[in-house]
Image (cartoon, rainbow, N blue to C red; front, side):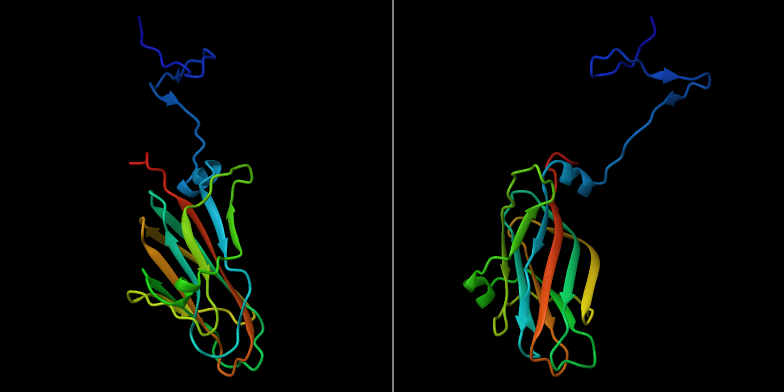
Amino acid sequence: MAEQIKDGTGKGNLAKIDLNNRLHTRAVTNDEGQQATKDGKSYNINTGFITLTNTSETPVLYFKNNEESKVHITTIIIGCGSSTGGSGTNPKFRFSKNPSTGTTISNANDVDVTSNRNFSSSVDLQALAYKGATGETLTGNGDHILGFATANGRAVISIDEILERGNSLGVYITPQTGNSSVEVYVALVLHIEDTNDL
């Protein structure tokens, strides 16, 4: 008797083999991030609006992974409002690897938003996510990414960053020359990697 490939749901369906010995299949494929959202392990982080009142580089976000699993950051969004007194070159941003000291950490002001992207999920993200402020400090282990933000707009940065348990990320913004007041925010799109994946 020929072997048969049966439907595992109990409906009794059998796989089709055509005259050329080809197995007929149709598949729905999700990338890792989409699957994490379905599983309730995908998150939006947003600092909320932070007013920077000078032209100095300011730490605006400290994020540390406290999950047992890896956290995969796929997008960082940097928004900058209209600057009072600012002109010339666009605002600058900088990311640092594994910051571990500074007043942004010791002040421990939680970001405004840590939201599960699956609206029916109650799985909380195990992480520290603090927003910074003018005059605060955050010391990392060197520069990781440098670039320009968008004056009176937002920059959407597609990245591919893995934070193991205990790893951290710092995000800093330097306002335009002459700035005395500008609202900024930083958002992360991230997910927890499935420990069952190979």
